[in-house]
Image 1 (spheres, rainbow, N blue to C red):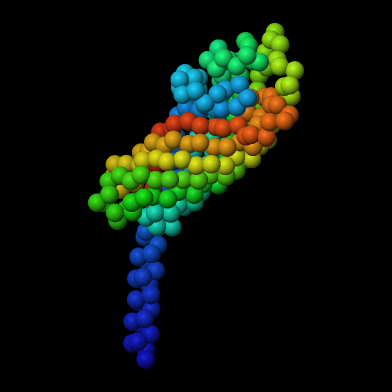
Image 2 (cartoon, rainbow, N blue to C red):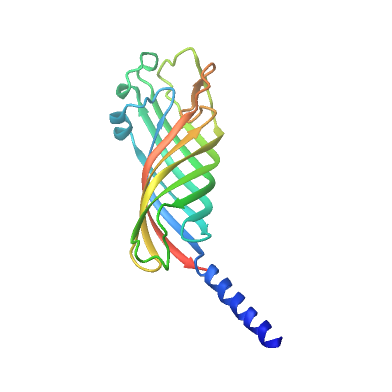
Length: 220
């Protein structure tokens, strides 16, 4: 009986160790661009590219295995829009200049198994979702006449945020990877630009491209 118990304990320990060795803690730092769509800023692709501004941030995630990860995402960036690029008659001469801080829970799914023991897959596409809270603040022009329908949002504004994106990560060695991703976040409250229209319930949209470097710590 004693030999059987020792055998079962050894098998359980090996299985437990094998499961833990597939888990990892991931630290990511990223730089990229940020643009938006709102009351003034339209979805014109040329304007979005021309008005993109810098953003940076980080991510701390725990991966339960080679595919699923959950963690915290933090981002800070600037937003800009010039009505000359959008040609909305109500906003003649208006510029948008906002800054934002975004934080939220992020869930990532690797399309291919990826990690220490999946060396056949040197790269994998992935998808992710994010939900959290966004703080924004805007600078106003004082020498421009705004539309009479505008409601201003002075000071720091707090909004919910949710959305996701797609990306590609590439392994360089056992611990280091790089990644590139496109994101699109909905911002209910419509206050990214510092003003909104009372009868417009559509959210602002925060979008961009970012590149990151990632270090993985395996939890065996």
